[in-house]
Image 1 (tube, helix red, strand yellow):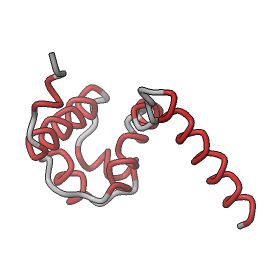
Image 2: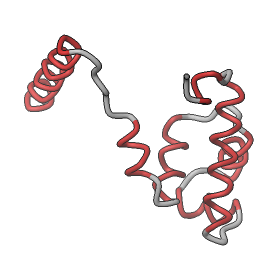
Image 3: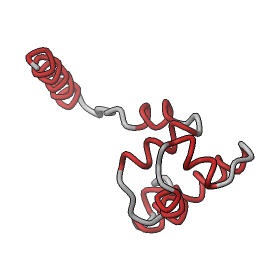
Amino acid sequence: MKPIFELMELPDLAEDIGQNIKLARAAKGWRQEDLSHASGASLQAIKNLERGANVELITFLRATKALGMGRAVWEVCQPTPQTLDELERVERARVESARVRRKQ
């Protein structure tokens, strides 16, 4: 059976994630203004994020980092190869990415 998030439409998923951000903020006893200040994101951006509206990725990352969720977000975004071929492609991409960064 598929996990619930795989069955959700993207707007519903965004709204659910926004609600989770709101709950994490409330758990800290923060107002939206507090999260805005702690993250460096505008108050309107925080409101949009919590509503599940379109926001820039950097806004999401700033807010989750301020809430202590940054590592969890980073870990979730790691590739999870399902086959040996996928694993090899991921490793080749990592080597190439490191090579390009060294040149810069």
